[in-house]
Length: 120
Image (cartoon, rainbow, N blue to C red; front, top):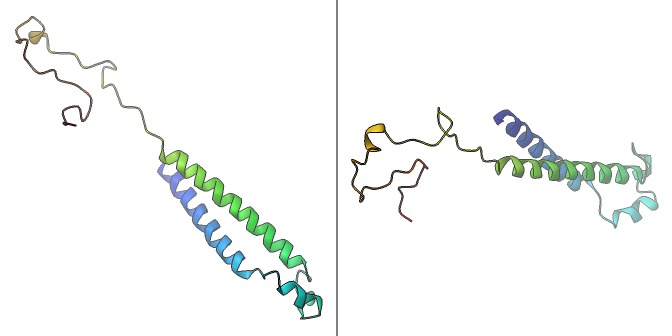
């Protein structure tokens, strides 16, 4: 379980850094007007509007990966293993010598639950 959490944390960190990088690479809405008048973006690798589509789609995919990894880590973090019932699999039994009525009525009850003796 520890390896799975570590892997999901690494995926979440890489997707977060990818989203940050891709958002910083994208141009604002005002930059499209400059490309229309020949600012040199039309000769780039993706064309005038190809880079915007590629970057926005990649950002959306990485954001979805980040969202899914966050939900997965939340689910795994809320997992609580069920308490063990002990070696015998049942509730703890009192010793045989104490069951014959030798204990006084004012004797404290011993609970097997952890933290039962802590005052609230």
